Image (cartoon, rainbow, N blue to C red):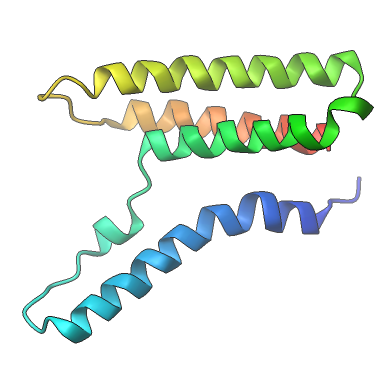
Length: 127
């Protein structure tokens, strides 16, 4: 199976890396203006579970938009399943964030990571 590197670059690579690069650029710019500012690498590299969920939903929405008319029922079904799973978990994250004592733990990163990987695979197959 030959991988579509262009699709992977524009649908996965750039959306995953560009926000981190932009954050680093903005922090560097701020450091040049505020000498007392200390950059925190953890903040630059922080990709929250809700950001991962939004990325997954955006990827799925793009797959629906580009491929709706040419997809068979099986691929459409998997896209709907991925969309529903991501939307449900994202809605639970939004509700949970209303608790002022809520702290994101590793399990939330794990679940959104698994949902993201599954979404990438499903969207790649549906392209």
